[in-house]
Amino acid sequence: MGTEETSSSAEVERAEPLQSDRGKTEIANGVVAKIAGIATREVGGVYSLGGGATRALGSVTQAVGLGDERTQGVSVEVGERQAAVDLVVVLEYGEAIPRVSEAIRENVSGRIEGITGLAVTEVNIAVNDLHFPGDDEQEQAEARVA
Image 1 (cartoon, one colour):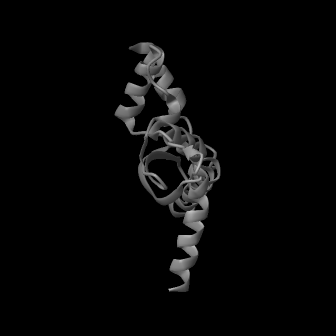
Image 2 (image 1 turned 120 degrees about the vertical axis):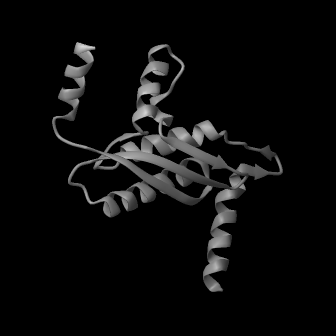
C-alpha cells in the first residue's frame, strides 16, 4: 500500500505543472511520439523503427515532405496526466533483445517524463526484424537495379 501512495504522489507531482490556477497545458500525441522515437534511436543496438512496409511508406512520404522519420514505428496514447507508447523496432543482429528492450523502456520513459511531465504507464516493444551487417549494401544494390 505504501508503494501505491508513493507512485500516486509522484504522478501528481509530475502532472501539476500541466494544470494550475493560471491555465492548462495540453500535449499533442505527435509531440510525445517524436520524443519516443528520438529516445528509442538513442539506445545502442537499435537499427531503426517501423516494419518493412512502414519504412518503405515512410521513405516515400518523407520524399514528398509529408512524413516524419522521428515518428515512424511509434504509436502513443496521451491522456491528461499519462502516456502509453507502442514501438516497432529493428535491432542490430547480436544484441540481447531483453537488454535492449529494457534500455529502450528506461530511456523512452525518462525522456517523456522529463520533457512533458506525463507519467509513462507502459512502453510496449515489438521487435519486427534484425539488421545484419551488409544488409544496407545489398538494399542499395537492389535499389540501383530497380
